[in-house]
Image (tube, rainbow, N blue to C red):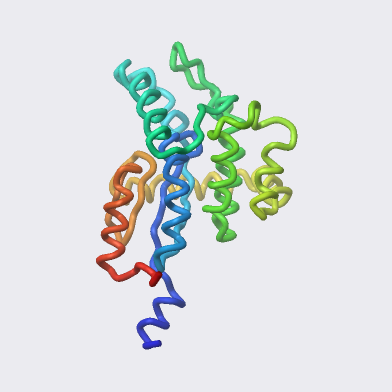
Length: 227
């Protein structure tokens, strides 16, 4: 192997994924991110962000009323197209009055799982955590995902240390939130406010429908691994 090849293997390129656990499009992208990590000489780095509803509680009061109906239809259609099991989470990870759009000040569910995601990402397991937890929330197989042992079992089945992640989310909430806020600023610096946002070498690729374009760019950079 050449020195350049050895260096590439030792220091893979990074694809940053700005990722929200309330986004169906993040869920529907996740399997492709797992494939990306396997088929390209890159590190897929999950950078958790809070949903726009938490970052901007007035968002759903201002947005065009057609936004939500289209979003619901489109995400379900995309799941059918991709052949991915799909149902909106029960319960909603955001505490929100869907009729008025009002967002509650206290957000115990989304803050817990997003803080745990940040802790997992710091241990190099962000993608594993995202795949496990998003499947739990979105594949339709679990009601009341936030109750009982559902979250613990999903993490443990993925080989994650659930007690350590959960303890960190509780004990280091301020530190983790500061890092999540840093992710949110990096997301804006990367070129967009929405999710999923994929950034490679400073170039933003917004939306799950830009995944193939990202792969094209990685192939241009000769980062595809041999079959």
